[in-house]
Amino acid sequence: MLMRAAALHDTCEQDDDSIEGFGWTAYDTRFGGTQTIHDSQGHVDITTDFVKTKDGNSWGIQVRGSLRPDAPSSVKTAIVFHVAHEKTEGDSGKSLRCMGSGTKVGAARDDVDIACYGYDPALGDFKFNVIGASSNGVVEGPVVAATGVPERSIWKAKYDLRRSFYGENIARSIDSFQPDFQANVDKVFPRTAPFDDEEHASFSRALLSNLLGGLGFFHGDSKVDYTNATEYLEIDLNFWEKASEAMKHATITTTGPMSLLSHIPSRPVFPRGFLWDEGFHLLPVVEWDLDLAISVLQSWLNLMDDDGWMAREQILGPEARSRVPGGFQVQYPQHANPPTLLLLFPIILSKLNKANAYVGHPSEYRSSTGAETATGTGDKARAMLRELYPRLSRHYQWFRRTQSGNFTTTDANAYYYPRPEGAIPDAGFRWRGRTPMHTFASGLDDYPRADPPHPGELHVDALAWVGASAQALQQVAAYLGGDFDGDAAVYAEHLAAARHNLDVVHWDPEQEAYCDTTIVGGGGDGDGDGDGDGYGEFQRVCHLG
Image 1 (tube, rainbow, N blue to C red):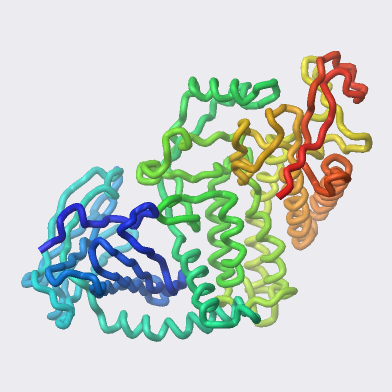
Image 2 (image 1 turned 180 degrees about the vertical axis):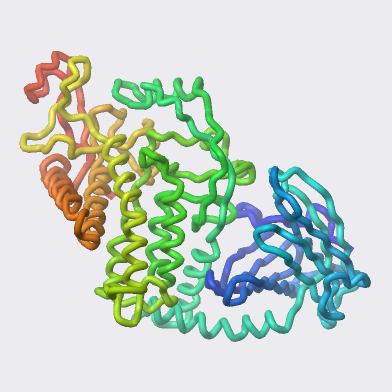
């Protein structure tokens, strides 16, 4: 007997009061882990164990439930297990079939209650079994229901399979995994007093586990505005109003399908890849599993277009779009995000040349004698960097070009904005897509900026990101050497210019802080003498925390 429909949960939602917390307590991407769900409405605490074989070709799950102290004696719990096999146009030979107990088709042992088997051209023959436990108190047998749905709607389909799972091998694997995981977390992320107690140990394991457990593979099309409307350049006063109006009339392109491997900030709220979030996500991942971090970096950089742009939100396919308000689904090639992925490369270099310790999962990019060996691992590491470097450089150049600030110009019809004496032209930047209330592109969505926005403003964080990116690229180019030595020299110049303008343009001696800048007042004689009589006065805008 199933619980009434109102008590069924297909997903865990952040605003669902009936779920009193959920998350991974231990999880390693290469092995699996344990997750808990506290369902107060269903009066049950659920534990799910997920394990994989070392070769990654097989996996198993175990679902356990225990009644909560307040559970009525009449409570019964059911598990709904969803099984789907995607079939796209042009596929041939794909199959999937599930059989209930008594049929035993495809089952290798007598205790199999459900046997699912099929074929996929990429996987070959596959099968998985549902194994019952004699001690789980099941009062009704398993039920299998099948239905066909369009490929784009598979995630909406309902498949009922009512039974608890149990497998001795899964239980043994989880039991051996737990102590190893705890020891490895302490080895990779050692804690010191006063954080060396069990409370903080549990916290650190949960923190890492939920980061790693948020890794997802996403596939689907995307919505992009490729119109390149002149309003998107944001060079006029009240530019945000004109850009907003242009967006209303733009023709939106549905791209071809793309794939992404990405850690997500929140499974229930933001189940999709975010560009600037990923760079921060990978900071601990690169210590835990270097090769996993590199795989995620490669996946993100594979999404880059010929200009160097990557959408800051990867909303791929109808399932992902179902979790995003319509006004935020379309991506714009004029809008950036902080280039946080570049932060990883100085760290990766330090792991490859063993300048810094690495005690995470074994890496195919390192060897016992170091990454600078003449053959083997050293060659693989260098090949990886040679593959990624051109795309990193292209993204950096795209950022400098599209987020550039207004300095001097030879266009007689364009504005001239005064800058402090000694400022280096072209070493100033501002985020596009800004409105009076938000600067989503910066990642600091509602951090206060100049009010109202002005096309002559410069953003201190945008310049800082350019400087940090130039420094990272300089290190990669210097590491590769040879043909890349000239690139390293250019990045060194960019870094020096960024540091110079941070002090000359953005430093406010009275506030003792680096601040945004804007232009106030002004009429418009355009004499370009910098005295502020034409296009206003230069002013720093500080918002201290």
